[in-house]
Amino acid sequence: MSEVARLIEGRSRDLGGFAVRRLLPAAGLQSIGPFIFFDHMGPAVFPAGGGVDVRPHPHIGLATVTYLYEGALLHRDSLGTAQVILPGDVNWMVAGRGIVHSERTPPEMRGADGAVRVHGIQTWVALPKVEEEVEPSFAHHPADTLPEIRSAGAVLRVLAGEAWGRRAPARVFSSTLYVDADLEQGATVDLPAEHEQRAAYVASGGIAVEGTRYVPGQMVVFPSGRKVRIAAIAHSRVMLLGGAPLDGQRQIWWNFVSSSRERIEHAKADWREERFAPVPDDPDSVPLPEA
Image (cartoon, rainbow, N blue to C red):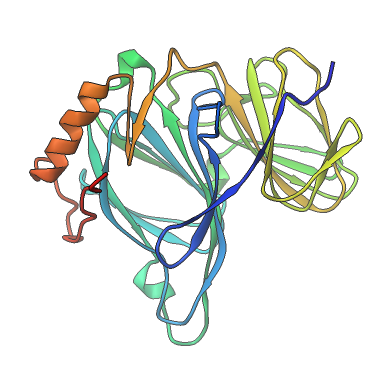
């Protein structure tokens, strides 16, 4: 039996000024563990004075997870949060019954003396059905608060959930695996066996599994219950993700995730009719798509 169940190739998406690679949802595979959306942002380079400008937009039924390799983003939301995220930090925003947020390059990073860079991973975690309408919340976890496991040539940072007996500080709603693996050439990692669904995304470098090589932009999905060893064939950054399967299919429309189509229709009307709370100090907004 193969150690690989499926290979997902990233699809390029233009977010207005910079491109992302989208891995989830994929054709025939909506989620891996609770992860229902996975974007690799950049690496992008903006001219001096430029940067990311994701205007205020709404979410329901999920938690957004932002993690940077390079650059900085200023998160603002309708709870009144204003938080800069730097490389190695985790921003964990629970949308629940509804939240609005924006993500922009901080003004102090847009100086005229050089280019503006951004590189990172943006994911959505679908909430269990019983938690879909939970109160919205936001938590920032600095890099030095995240558990690290170090072995020969490997630094494994647990971003959310649990791995190798270490637990990240973010509040998760189901069994979750989310790890940033920084691997020197020749380093190996044995995936945690306790999670039913598991995958590895190659952000940079390259890996080999059972003699087959995988390159940046590819996500390797593994069968349940199999022992899996990943070997770095170059200095690599690999995101390990997974956990318990979702408790049923989800409806996904624009930035809304729910087990109920009616709930999404209600959220669409709320945004159209401006019933979501605004983001303080960021009065702009993204209009509801027509389709």
